Length: 318
Image: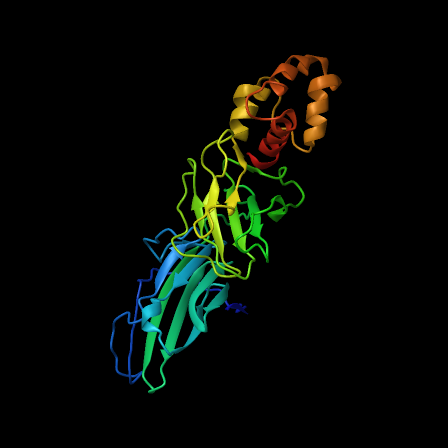
């Protein structure tokens, strides 16, 4: 049985971000032995489980995964501790069959952070790995440069069954169900009590999750190209028959600037709903009436999806 342990640790100090080096210190037996190797073989991954090349340049606001070599933890009691050196961070530790071998971390302010992982064995010996991380704030204004995150939840009880459409998490301003825009990040959160392993299919240019997601873990796929005709973009490597997530990936920039050429008459006007935009094209504004043919064009998108793409572009572009 897999059990999620949520550990919230918040630092209250902020200091300058200095140059730091990646450092692993492993110790077995006497913790004061002074050995300097990464005995636990801890690895840092991005939210989409791709490799991290520089732990000095991690970004605030992003989720990072940490995974220990499980083969080294047989019979060990594992603890995770944050050594706060400026960055404000949260960590979640995940327990799989009684072994705390994975965690996710996100920092909200820039600075440094030490992560110490200890594995204590019955005979009194221990492994210790210390990882020094550096977080930078790439967007101090707080407006974001990736656009909104679109969230899909693998609901508890899904098991080997079908991934339903009710897994889409919607909030004010989100697109209709089953639509993700180019520039958004699709975040899949495993809320199920069993493991799921998202796999990018049918042209999606994002990294597949190399490991199954435990309860509470997530997988990020940044949408970089338009896909409006293929189906089953995300499949579950552990249940490919029914574990499928179909959606349209729409390029709102193309629709606004190319297909409808809205910039020829409009500046950057925000605040209109998709329904208001569609009504304006069909009946409200005579000068826009000629665009009705584009709304009804059979090109893989419905009229409401095109109108909502225009709304999303206005609300999320600069």
